[in-house]
Length: 216
Image 1: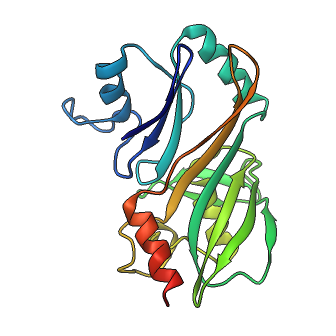
Image 2: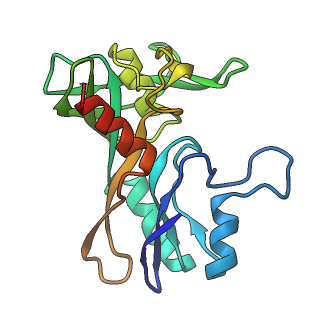
C-alpha cells in the first residue's frame, strides 16, 4: 500500500486491489488493511470502505473527534469521491446520471441489483474521459454509497466494467479484476475546515489496462 497523506487527524492510503479494508471470513490470520495500518500507526478509525477488488484511495481518522467530523461530512454528502473505470463498449454520451434504485446482497453471489420497487435511492454521475476502439475510460462520481453501486449502474447503462464478470462483462485478458480505481477524495479537514483533495495514482494493472486500450 502507499501512504498518500498522514497528519495528527487523517491517514489517507492508496489501497491495493485484492486487500479488504476489514476482515472477511473466519481466517483470523488473513491480512486486511486496518490490521496492516494499525501495526504501523496504532489505533485508527474507519471512515468509509471500498470493495476488496477495487484499488485506490481510502480515508481513516486518527482520533475519535476527527472520526465524528468526517462521518458527519459523509452522512451529509459533503464529501466528493471520484473513481476512474474502464468500461466495455463506447458510450454515446459525454456525461450521464444513473439513478437506478438498488437492492444489495441478493442471491448466493451477494450481487447488487436494480430494483424499482424495493431498491433504495442510488445515484452515480458518469463522464467520459477517453474513448478507445471498443472501450472507454470514464469518471464515476457516486452521490450515494451503495455496495457495488458504480459497477451495477455501469452495467445497467449497458457498459459493464472491463473484467467485471460478476456483472455480465465478458472475460478479458486485459485485467484480472473489475477495472475500477478510487481516484480522488475531497473533504473539509477536521482540524482546519480547509478543503483538501487527495489523489491516488493508478496501480500497475489499471495503468497497463489503460495503455492496452489506448494502443488498439
